[in-house]
Image (cartoon, rainbow, N blue to C red; front, side, top):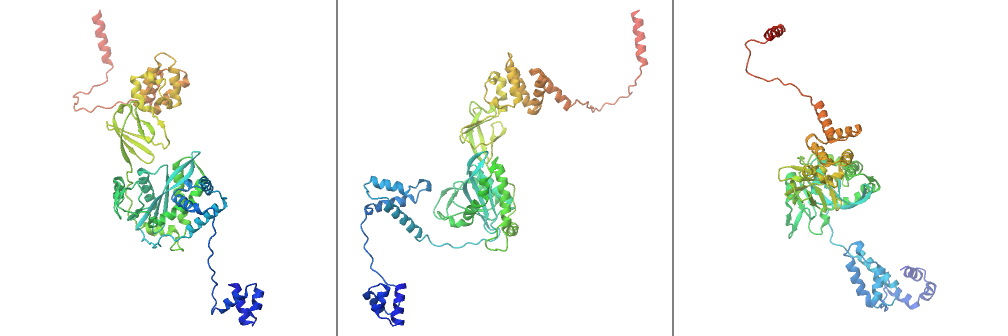
Length: 504
C-alpha cells in the first residue's frame, strides 16, 4: 500500500511519467500501469500460491489428533512436541524436527485465536440476596511438611465479602464446618446459596435443573433456612464471582500464607480469618469504587437472616470394634473402651474430631488424624482389661503412650515378682481418682525412693483426705429430751466410792 500511494502521488500529482515512476520505485511498468488504471485506492490482491509439498504432510492429521486429545488432558499428562516428534519418527517420518515444532506452534496459535463460546450476561445481586461457594486446591507448610489443602471459598454476591477456610480433605463434615465459620464471620445468612454440582451436595444430576440433593446437605440448608441453587453443567460463569475470588486470593492472601510456616491447621485458619477481614478494609468494591468491601458489607449485614446455633455437622457411620478394641476409619485405627469389644458402635465424623457412641450409651471423643496407616491409642481404654490380664502390661502397645512417671513406675515394679498386678492396681486408681491425682502421688513416691503400689495408693488416699477433710454433720431428729443432760464431774467420784466398797 505504501508503494501504491507513492506511485499515485508521483504520476497524478507531480506529473511524472509512468516509466520514470516505475523505475524510481523499482517496480514493473506494467504493474504500475495496472495499479493506476484502478479508479480508486485499493489494496492489491495477489493470487494465492499453491503450498509446496513437505515431508510432514502425511503426518499432519496424526499430529492434529494427538494435539486435540492432549487438549482434554491435564497439563501434567500432556505430551511435549519432542515426544510427538519421536513418535512420528517411529512411524516413518524422516524429516527434521523443525517443521514439527513450527506446525504445532501454529496449531496452538489457531486454537487460541479461535472464537470461544457465546457471550455472557452480566449478573447483579441485591444486598443479602445470595452467596457463592467453591473449593480450591492449595499448598502450605504445616508442621514442617508441605501439605495439600482443600480451601473453602464463601463470598457474598453483593458486597463481595469473602471467607477462606482450609482443611486437609474435602468432605461433608468440612463443608458443614466451612459454612458455620463463614456465616459466623459474616454476621448472618443470605437467602440463597449458589453451588456447582459438587459430590458433597449433589448425589445425582438430572435433566435441566433437577438434582438429587444429599440428605445431610439438605439438613444443613434447612437448619440455616437458605435455598440452595446449583449451576448447569460446565457453566462456571453462573458463579463467576467466587470463581474469580479463587484466582485473586491465590495471588495475594494465599501467596503470603504459602511463604510462612505454620505449626497447625488451626493456626493457619486463624490467620486466614484475620487476613480476610483486613482485605475487606483495603479492597475497593468493583461497582462502587468510592466504597470499600467492608463499607458495603456493613450495609449488607443488616439485611442478612439472623444466625442460629451452628449446625451439628457430622457424618455418621456404623463400625465394628475389633478384638483389640480398635475401630477402623479412613485407613487409620483408633482405640475405644475395651468394654465395647466386638460390638457395633456409631461413629460421628466431624472436621477435626471423631465421636464414638457405644452400645451402653457411653460416648468417647477422639482426635482425628488425616495421615494414613496410623494407630492412635488411648491407654486408659485398656485399664479394665489389664485388671484381668495384668501380664499384658510388659509389652502392651497402648501403655507405651503413658506419661513418663507411670512408665518409670512400671519399669521399677516389673523388676519384682507380682509387679504387674501391683501396677494394674495403680492404673485402676486412675478411673476412680483421676489421672492428675495418681500422677502426683506417683511422682512423690519416685522422689522419695519408695517404689511400691501400697505407697502410691497410701499417698493418693492421704492427698484426697487433705483435699476433702471429713466433716461431722448434725442429724436432724424429731425427738426432744425432757431433762437435758448436765455435766456433773462429782458423780464419777460417787460411783468410784461405791465400787471400792463392793470390792472390800
